Image 1: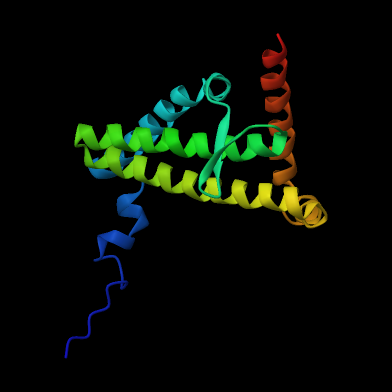
Image 2: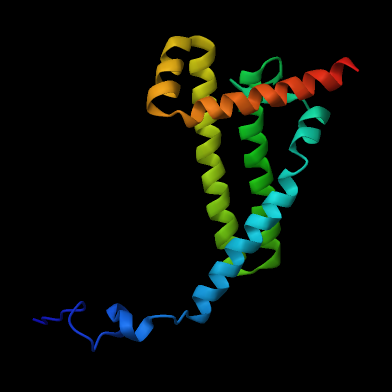
Length: 164
């Protein structure tokens, strides 16, 4: 039977902070650069979100498309659009056949999948159980109220441009 302690003493360079301090492996550097590049690229794609929503003012729910008619709908539409853009970034990263780019894009997509789910659930609460949504948004997750405020601004902008 082997009794190996991988966390023991300085002979294990993986946990020796003095040895590794200030040193970044080439893989860590590639990964960091890939995450920064993917984040910048996503940000570039997301700059036109309002225009994209104006061109296609719909969101999907219950297996079909619905026209955006309120700020709550904007929350769902934005979550779905963010996810769609992240999926496009992932598809492009896969075409590049760069492991680090693909890994970063996959993490980005996973994040926006979770965001889309959160936005969808929050919109559902707002539409059907407003009192619960206010309690959760006000006390447990005040950032949801900020999301609603941003959605109200987006809805006002989309509405303003539709009236012209």
